[in-house]
Image (cartoon, rainbow, N blue to C red; front, side):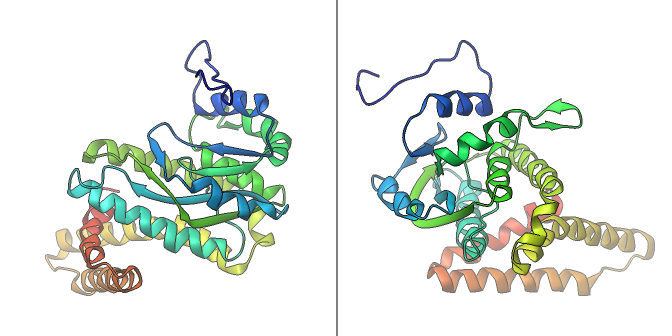
Length: 273
């Protein structure tokens, strides 16, 4: 706080992430705004890696790659670390090929301040079902950027280590909160899809329908088991095969055998999420 380069803003009360962000953005003066969540440590070269991507005036935001800072705490944190790798280096990296990362994650995201300034009123006044929104800030701000015509990018070499839940209960609550944000902002951003590449439309539809179809498959299989006493072997083997193929391909791409263990996450995905 004694460093003259920094101006610490202390709000009179906890008003939530969104209003805290807005207060800081409105007091800022630089060309770029870097958002870092409080449980995150950045690599020393993150800003040097992110800023070149922002030299293109068409780019409104860019995010770095996330890792689990407490990866070695438990079996769950190891799985989450792999989940983050997949989310960044499969999903975000694919979306970045078309300049439309659909969610620039809060632990490490840089924004063009002039773009933010034009979106703050929309960002601040978001309502859902008649109530002010208090979740899903990162995804909503990214959707606003895309709707305003800006590109959003991913920089895999900009590494940010963030603390992840090390117990199943907090992890499931976090995932529920993120799922709500995904479904809500997909509804709000449906008009955006026709202007994006066909792959992105397929990607967004898959993200939203995939979990619902998986849940329907599980319920159908359980009903078959209860009503007929027969096990849905074909559906079960299909899920196992898809899981193992996916994990094997990722293990080859990342050159890390640990990704074969990510198949354990399928049990959480199928029976809990």
